[in-house]
Length: 297
Image (cartoon, rainbow, N blue to C red; front, side, top):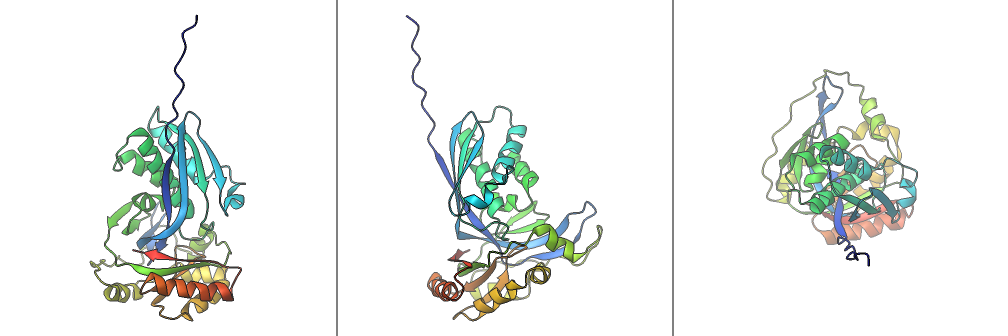
């Protein structure tokens, strides 16, 4: 009789959150000779985000679910797969498998949705293969996938500098926050192109980031550290003026600003209850917008 083989035991499904990245500040310090813009950004991560699962296996694949699945269905080069393929190229024999992305964040919105998904994929592959979170190959794959992916791989409050390769941990106070996207995509290349900086241009030096222990000092510092991409993004998408006005009209608002290259605006509040109340006000007045109250810090 032929020898019977034991049934294959599937590895358990692994899950990672892919939290939204919010640029509390974003300074463009110049443009490097290699064409990348030199940035300095204080980054926080939200309680809201996407969710990614991995069923370890032999075939690398991606299934889409959630409200944003239809938007991504036409993209054969999703950042989840791009990050995974890059890590496979760096680590022969890497166990991969089938990812399922529950897409809840808006696409091309300046809150790192795709970058957060890619970073979550790298964290899942690290867990499936017993790699330490500090493995240099994870960071290299993150940077090769996109400039925001290293910060999203870290996924905690930090300062992101260079083109995204320099990550410094920060302790930030917690804020209630409201994220609002008018469902108008603003392509990142168009925003940077509107800055019209030639390679080799230097504009300014980065300011030191103090150790924030309370909301007041943090807000005072942020007031002087704007998002330099907001003016060109507003010119490309004038609806952002309406979003900013709606946020400024909410009670207890402390700061209103755009995140990343847009088109998501955020507002900071003393706590999550104030943010939730503001979210109800904005959603009632603008039912076509994506509105999400959350926590930052």
